Image: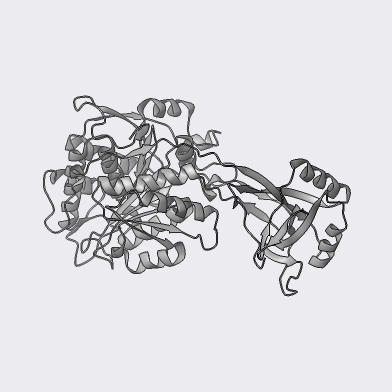
Amino acid sequence: MENSEVLHPKSYKRINQATTIAVAEGDGIGPEIMRATLNILKAAGANIKTEPIEVGQQVYLSGNSSGITEESWKTISKNKVILKAPITTPQGKGYKSLNVTLRKSLGLFSNVRPVSSLHPYVHTNFPEMDIVVIRENEEDLYAGIEHRQTEDVVQCLKLITRPGCEKIVRYAFEYARAYNRKKVTCMVKDNIMKLTDGLFHTVFKEIAAEYSDIESNAQIIDIGSAKIAASPENFDVIVTSNLYGDIISDIVAEIGGSVGMAGSANVGKNVAMFEAIHGSAPDIAGKKIANPSGLLNGAILMLAHIGQAEVADKIKNAWLTTLEDGIHTADVYQKGKSTKKVNTEEFTEAVIERLGQTPKNLTPSTISKGSGTITIPEYHRKESEKQLLGTDVFIDWKGSDPEEIGNALNQIKAHNLTLKMITNRGVKVFPNGMKETYCTDHWRCRFISKQSTILEKSLQYGEVEYEQIINLLATLHQEGFDVIKTENLYEFDGQRGFSLGQGE
């Protein structure tokens, strides 16, 4: 594709040139499982060098609220690839999530979490499941934009962007094609969030039309999650937004047998980070019983990313063979089914001993048979004609009678604007609200042009000048109304860009 970003190159560097990886040992069990993982990679012949970076608990406690040193940022910028063990975020206020910081600062927009059944060697009720969850990684509620607006009400902004949707949905279909997957399912809640999740679903349908060789469908997130938990074998690749993806990927990992077994890739235009999806487990740190499988599977994804898919297959098949042979760490050990309970080092040695072997019952790894190349076209914004049609004024008012605030607002000089409605927590309460509706101190008051008209039972909004809104806000302030925020109402190419109130 012209002006495309190649995210998964088939040959990352010349095969005789080692790829340098920024390595974060992490906290808790992190150093133990990182040591085990790197020993396996070395024994398998992975052509890599490692360069340590400082992140996590000790960096936090040194006074760095982001949990990462300036020198580590430089190392990441230079090497472009990170292998990270779990870290511990200290309890207390002021400490930022390191994972969120890394993902957003480095543009790691795609979180890829594959989970397949290891039945009967790891307990699961779903022996046929084989799912890849592809989660948007930068926006949605994880933007972390929150405000307390009144005594009773706080808000969190859900930000969904067209470029964010296009990148993650395109990535999902490209991934499916690159790794011979047959179906991509989109998970949304656009029956309620018609604009935000509606945009995600719209983009999904647009891009799905370009991949006629891949089956596509969409499901509402609540019933979709239930179906994943009940019949995961019916899913292949799932693409969704940040929060939904976080929840779904943990569901998938847990019903697959263990969250501790799953690895994760975080992929962006320039940098990629690979990790386990579990936490630092400080309660078992130093006991030599931690299962390194999650981080090892993250490292396998890393090898595929840097063009060493054959080594990735070699390690994955040795790992699968170890599980087949019943050599298990305590977290997945099954009395009567496992043959030997081993510690971290013993499990590592068992995997190394089986390098070059292929599992007899579990499906062998065939990462190297995929194309390995994923390309994302450069985003081009489509200009729209934008018209201002009014404003939603949010008022902190301690009364409880919608008629009282509504009548008071109708009495003010509104600068050729008219009060259309008032909602409380999204429910229309004025005019003609229900007396049973509970109201808090957070009132959304919609003002539109007096030139708005009703045509064929549909409201045609008149255009509004920005100065009218400024004057309205000044008047509301002068009249003693506590305006806490505004959201202007826009139309884009004739399409309404704002929600209606429930009951409107």
